[in-house]
Amino acid sequence: MNQFSSLKKKCAEWICSRCREGGCELKWGARRPPRAFIVDCERYKADKAINTKVADCLFVKVGASTDIAVVELKGGNPDVERAISQVQGGLDIGDGLLSGYRVDVCLPILVHSRRLHADDYKMLGRKKVTFRGLQRLVLVAKSGDAVENLWSKNSSRYAVP
Image 1: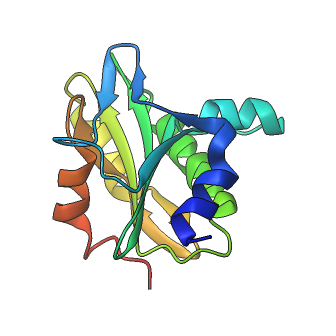
Image 2: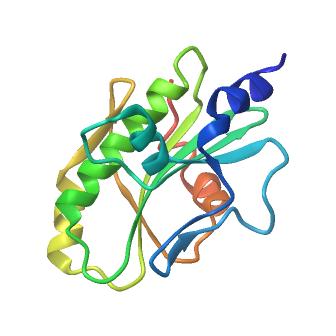
Image 3: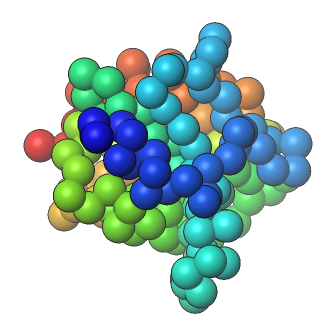
C-alpha cells in the first residue's frame, strides 16, 4: 500500500469534502489535487474525546512532497488569541495523524471573512505555533482563498526539514 492510500485509510472516518463554516471557507484551488483530502478536526476531536481547542480543518496533499495546512475559520470579529490556540490544537492533531510520515510543508492558517484589526496583526506577529519542534507564525488568508496558492507562495518559508 502506498503512502497516500495508507494515510487516507488511517484518516477515513474524519474526511470531509470541504472546509467551510459560518460563511467562511478555504478552497483547494481550481480543483482538488488527485491525492489529497481534508480532515474535519472537530469530528476527530469529538471521536477521540480531546479536551483542547482545535482548528476546523486539516488539508493533506501527497505528491512529490507531503504538504499539510491546518485551518481555523473565523467570521466576524475573531478572538485572535483563541484562534491561535485552535491552530495549535490542529497542528497537534496533524502531528499525531501523520506520525511516521514525512511532512515537507506545514502551513498554519487563520482564514477570516472580514478585516482584522491592527492589534490582531500585531498579536499574529508575536505569537507562534509549533509543529514538530519548529515555531512558525500563523498565516492569514481571506475567505474564499485557495490553499494551493498559499502552499505555492509559502512552501519555502514553511518547509519542515
